[in-house]
Length: 191
Image (cartoon, rainbow, N blue to C red; front, side):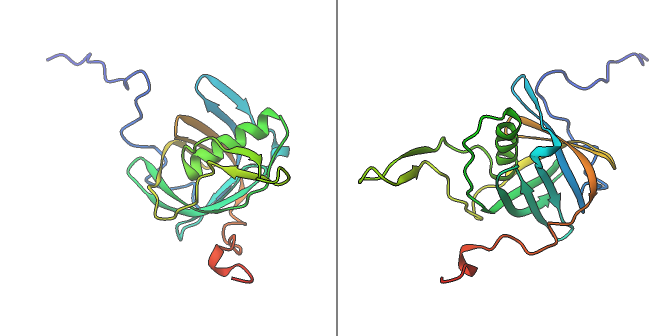
């Protein structure tokens, strides 16, 4: 009987059949600061001053901040990680060119909302006010974003979604996800 069989994981883009951090879900109820985003073959370090972070609460609420906008939603555990169902987002614009901010916006957007079409900003009919087209509506009934937990320890979290890998470090317990969430349109004043 041969015992020298190769039992190593497959090479390439294949995801692991299960994730090491899923069973204990040690990433829930923690504040995770984004440290890097890898899209394709490019990895961008995210400085602490960008302040991009993620929090997942035990009640299934998730809140993220990409350095510019906050995005909330819900999540459900899966065999390989969790699925994110996007909720509301703030819509602050960023006109800068800081690679860390741009990478954080892209990575956190993929994590919370999935791939989105390009947005187009153009003048309105009078030529004065810009209008945005191609912006995806936030639809809680939309298909979830599938997130694979590649690694999870008490201090590090590595997620993969939408062709991007996001690396986080734990900076403490969750604080913001358990606070008042971003209001939805139905609770906005004057509605």
